[in-house]
Length: 209
Ligand code: TYD
Image (cartoon, rainbow, N blue to C red; front, side, top):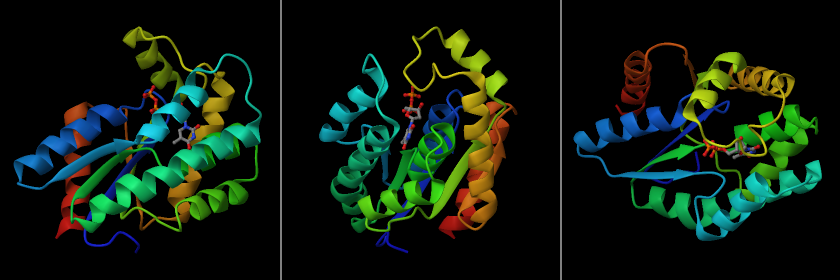
């Protein structure tokens, strides 16, 4: 493990799978138990990352798939070095929305780049850092799309991709969870938020013991 003394937990899943809601609930629970929690995300968890986030999510027009992969990797490199590692070194719990599994799923399966190359690129960027626990909120893309529609927010570049893209992303996430069973906790994100939160708390509790 590369995380020093803290605990590093990432949330993964498709757009509209409820990561933010669950990350909020878990943070409240951990803080209630007296833990220091650092909330962060990729892309955009640092100042430089905010600039990169703006490009990858809001640039009008195409971005070449490899350029997109490098932009996410650049965001990751800076974020891990300046936000995640320092927080872990201080013994904090880092709760992070999305990490390298998103790159493997979205740039690898979604954009059809080589999954192993994308993973290696991210590992290089982050000097091999991997989370202690990755919570995958698994949801059928059609259900996720219905949630996004009802949220009434304009779609970003990735959200606007067609259903088939999001199917590939979902399958890729599930494949990653199978490959790394010990790191992943897969939760059915179609359940009620409180039930999902309970499952997540059980998984995190086991990790903190
Ligand atoms: P997210 O912050 O979850 O979007 P929102 O704030 O709208 O909930 O993620 C932004 C988008 O970036 C999401 O569609 C997934 C995509 N993404 C990648 O394609 N590759 C990556 O490596 C990461 C971290 C995100």
